[in-house]
Image (tube, rainbow, N blue to C red; front, side, top):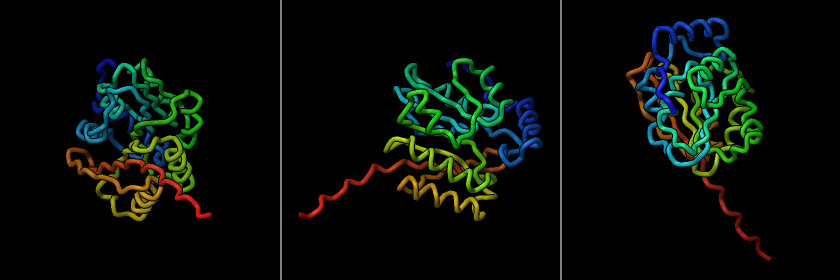
Length: 212
């Protein structure tokens, strides 16, 4: 993949701000994430070996750039955003990346149609705290259904909102679905500071044999 702008310049900040004003609930951020946050979001992910990677809510492409720089030649990468303006921008910057305009609620059917099951890693920039709870529930169900056992789901929460009931509820729901506790990393070099959270999906428990 070619090196493109990391999406943190003034133009990207202004573009994101304009999209936030039009749809604050689905965009969820006033400024683009920092390179430091992008590096933390992909830290520890083996993106070079053949596999399937999904990014939810790429926005201006800050995380997209960090993923693209690490992709191996046989790794498939799908980006999904509900805002057509963001999708157009991602397509212009990274023509080799498949970026589609759709809701993350449809993730299961989107990856199935592209024969990408199961997914190894999902990186999400979606503002779950501000999304309607029914939408969040549908997205998490779709994430759980497509992720392979041992696969990872990474997202972030802003530090100032980490203790809000919506944020706590999201972490609890994700932990219940993944069957594991998340690892967390604090990123202070971001405005505002953020906590990166990564869950790994637990392997299914074997069903004990029934007594005769």
